[in-house]
Length: 279
Image 1 (spheres, rainbow, N blue to C red):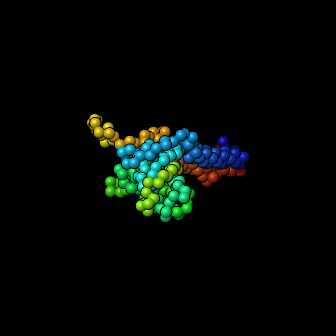
Image 2: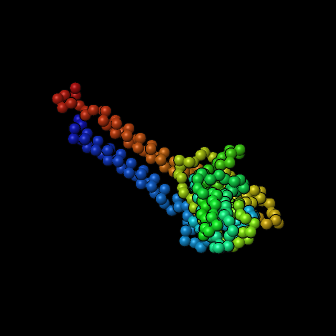
Image 3: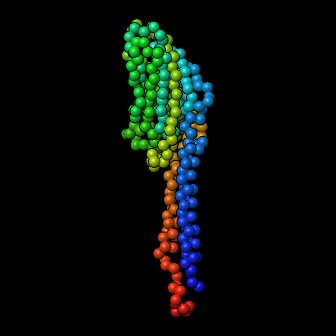
């Protein structure tokens, strides 16, 4: 039984088609993981946010990602909100302070800070964390883009970890005559999914949310608990599943197809036509 050139060409075409189909499947699956509902970082875009702000870490107002929290306060107050962030997300916090008109005597400087569940201040990658408002400015806008939340970190590191994140907004430079003037504040926290490129091995046993150590130990306390921001809509990440598994499996399939295709190219066309059978 000899293999004809036409049959060999057909096999090559079939392998080429399978290879291209695998590439298309891998690309579409990766896009589905990145753009699907599970990768959405702002599930509460249309929800009404809270209209108050806390004045300490213990009274911080809970926000869902995508919600806009508003508050009426006085210049000089410390305002606190708290929201959840999971592994693989890069949170962005935005704040707008609406200043009173024709009531201020000088410029003012406003600042937004973000703290993790251990109350460690997290540095901003970029954004306008501190801004100065002129005496006649109607508003001032602040922003802070945090580093990507990691699923695990060394004890000595200050990497952002899954759990609650506290927003603190206040004025850091204000004339004494302007203290107590009414201001309006809008705050919003959203996240961008960074994907498996930022995944690390290991995971926390529990997310860093207030009261987790007491709850895990089964102890009861009469003292008021620090409020947390709940958990993401799809729950906290398990720590073992990432989209790197998808790329690993897809790469293995493509490697197998490439090996079969390479073998079909190098094995030859079978018995030459001029050689009689049985030789």
